[in-house]
Length: 321
Image (cartoon, rainbow, N blue to C red; front, top):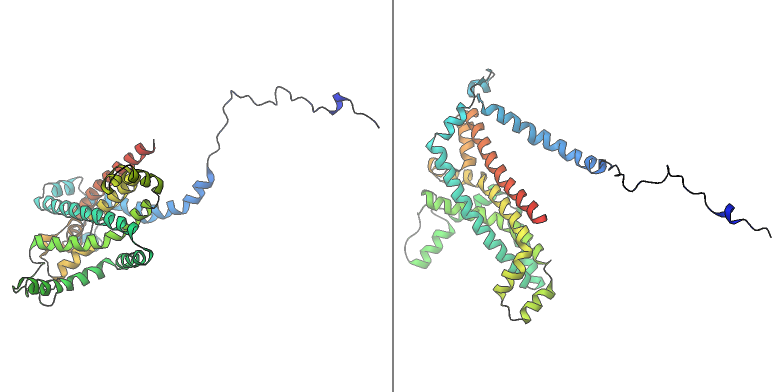
C-alpha cells in the first residue's frame, strides 16, 4: 500500500493576492428584484395619479373656464387663482365646516370602532361571527346606497326616526326635516360617515388585539390591575402604532368626503350652507365652470393631506428607530 506524503495531500496555500482583505468594504449589490416587483405598481401610480396630479397643478395656474373646455387655449395667470381662493370667505367657511365634520366623525369612529373590537374579544364564537358579518355588510354597502337608506330613515313624512320620536315623546315629529338645518344636516352626515367607517377600524383593532399576549394580561390581573388599567398600561402600547395609522387614514378619508354630502344635499339639504370641501370643489369646477379655481382648491387640499401623511410617516419612522 502506497502512502501519500503529507506535502502532496495538503491543499495548496492560497496566495496573498487571492485572500480577501477584511478591511476592504464589500460592494453592495443593488436590490433589483424588489424594484422589478414594484415597477408595475409604480407605473400605475404614475399613469393614474402622478400625471393627473401634474395636470391639476398646471391647470391651477391657468384661466380655465367654459371657453377652454370647448377648445380655447388656456391663459397662464400665475397665482391669481390661489389669491382668489385664499381671500374668499366662503372657502374658509367651507374648510372650517369640513374640519369640524371630520373631527366629529373621526372621534366617533375611533371610539366606537375600538369599543366594538374590545367587545368582540369578549364574545363567544357565534356572537363574534354575527357581529363580524354585520360589520362586513355595513362595510360592503356603497356610500351612495348607504346614504339613500339613511335618508329614508330620516325622511320627513315616513322616516323611522320621526315615527319613533313621536311614539316616545308624545309630540308630533311627523313632517320634521332633519336636513333643512345645517347642524342637524351635519349630524345626519356624521352618523352616515361614522357608520360606514366603523367596520375598518373595528376589524383592524381586533386583529391587533389578538396579538396582545394573554400571559401578560393574566399576570396583570393577578397583580390586581382592573380592566381599565390593563387596557391603558398593557393593551394600548400594543395598539398605539395601528391606532395612529387608523387615525391618520380616517382624517384623510373624512376630510375629503363627497358622496354622502352630495347625496344628502340632493335629498333635501341646502347646498350653500352644507358644502364641504369635496362638494365645494365640484361646485366650483363643474357647476360654475371655473376649473382653474377648482384646481387651486384641489391643490390646497392635496397639500393639507400631504402634510397629514408626512406627519404620520415621520411619527412611524421615529417609533421604528
